Image (cartoon, rainbow, N blue to C red):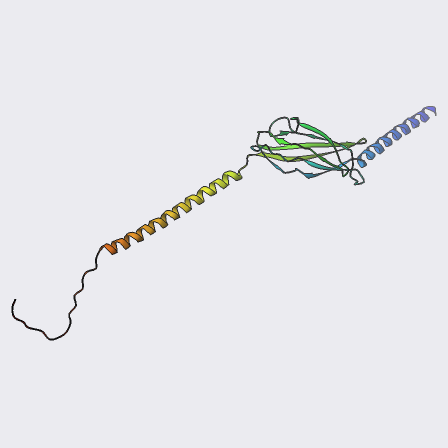
Length: 200
């Protein structure tokens, strides 16, 4: 009987511990922070101009209320296409403002072209959240394409101008030729009575 009681007590203790663990994990899931990417996802950074796009996030709690003062960490890749923040490091730690917004200021691309991911994590009063942004480092191609267009237009205009000048010159030479060559004299016969005079 005593052994049976001990077994029951052990089972009840294990069940209570398991239920507490489930309850705790459920509370953590409910209290998880939600991170929404506002700007910077899908952005293209200019390698030549060393110009990047700052990631902007919004952090909210489980009730959907913006969280002020949450700690947000942005992390860039250590190799391949990537970048750096203002201090030259691969990570930046900041806090959300009164509207729950955090900005990874000063992002600059490195010299490696390609796509990379920015990982962001937020923590506030024991709750956490995570998000990922994707950006691409690339060389600007607008300038070269525009230069090609300008060159092609210049060639076309030059050819058209040359043709017009040739046509104008041809017209002037024809006019000069027609002016230089006298027209053949045309004979005319007038009717009337013939006159006869003494020989000269």
